Image (cartoon, rainbow, N blue to C red; front, side, top):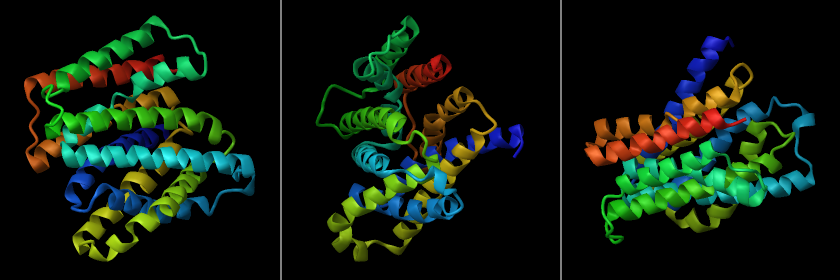
Length: 281
């Protein structure tokens, strides 16, 4: 892989991650089934890559227990994100989730005692203003507002997951760590969705396969492979484009045309994500 192909791989990975909300909209099943299906086919895709890893990258017992905990966080993150898509729409769910850099900054200061810089406070402020502008109304019974709130909760859980991964995946190959986390999701959700599986439409199975293979297995593998040649800071900036891809596809496929106010608020949130990536060390 060359630096140019690694850069292309990152953009393709960001595009695939951005498609998660699209598949969530297309699948008529509930969030529990969607998350289970994503984890199932994600495990099958990641397992093909993990089989070639050396034993030196295998987690010990303590790390395995921590990966189970981070797997539970990943499960909760996916559930709240797809719930945001179902009760709201792809745009508000994606923009709500994009608030995670602000939560990451605040949680790093709270949990790790890291000093928050002026630039990082600026990121938090941009996200807050952007979320206010994106909020359709103050009516919390409306679907769009509820979807945004679920999306923000998804962003909070993703920030917690990112911080948990700082500890749990240290010294463990990222693909193997993702495999362990997805296996945890399968074990937790199988008893809850077992009776629902025979009711899933054939077309929904297709969307679930694409969601798990493309948005989990392939996207994650491209991200990990590209990091061998591309700086993590550059990768983070590229992955900040994920909401742009998701909103663009939603506009084309579902006619979810965001208004000027939502576009302006979304631009602030995405700008904050770019700045956060540039400030990362």
